[in-house]
Length: 285
Image (cartoon, rainbow, N blue to C red; front, side):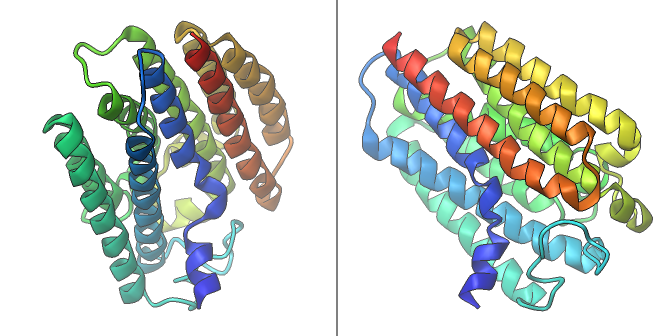
C-alpha cells in the first residue's frame, strides 16, 4: 500500500516543485540574507501542493475514464485498483490542507498577499482534473503549470524571504523560465497521451495541436525558457536550458508512445540543473 501511495506522488515530476523554490530563494539571497526555515517552508508547501494536485489528478482521470488499460504512461494508483477514488481524494485533501497550514505560517512572516497566492493555488490544484470544467480537459493545463509552477512558486518563495513591491523585472523573467520548463514537461506527458485522451474528451493543448504541432510547441517552450533565463541575468542557466532543451527536444522529436516516458525524467532534470546553475549565479551576484 505504501508503494502505491509513493507511486501516486509521481516522484519524477517533483523537481518541478523543488526548482522554483531554489530559484526564488536565490533571488531573495541576491538582495541580502535569507532564512533557511522560510526556504524549507516554501519547499514543503510547494511539494505538498504538487502532491495534492497529483493525487487529485489520479482520482479525477480515473473517474472520468481517461486512465484506461491502454494508457502508455506510468501506472496510476486509482485506475489500477491499488487505491480507491475516495481514499485518493482524501489524500489530496490532506496534502492540500497541510500545504495551507504551511502557507499560513509563511504568510505570518511575509504578509497577507501570500494568502491570495496560496488560496488560488489550492483551488487551481483541485480544478486541474476535478469539478464541472477541469482545466486539463479544456486545454488550460499548460497555462496552469506556467502560472503556478512558474510565477506563483518562484515569486512566492522570493517574496516570503524578501518582501518588496514592485518585484524586480529579473524576478519575473526567472519565474517565466522555470514555468516554461515545467510546461515543457507537461507537454511531453500530453503528447504521449494524445491517442488515449482524445477519445474520452480530454482536450489537452496537445490534443488540439496534434502530434507534430505539439513537438514544435515543445521546442519553442525550451527556446522561450532560454531567452527568459538570459533576461533574468543567469548566463549559466541560459546555457543549460539551451543545450539541455535542444538535446531533449531532439529526443522527443524521435520518440513515440512509451518511449516518451524516459523524456519526462530528463525534462525534470534539465529544469533542476537550470535552477541549480541559476542558484549559484544569483547568489554570487
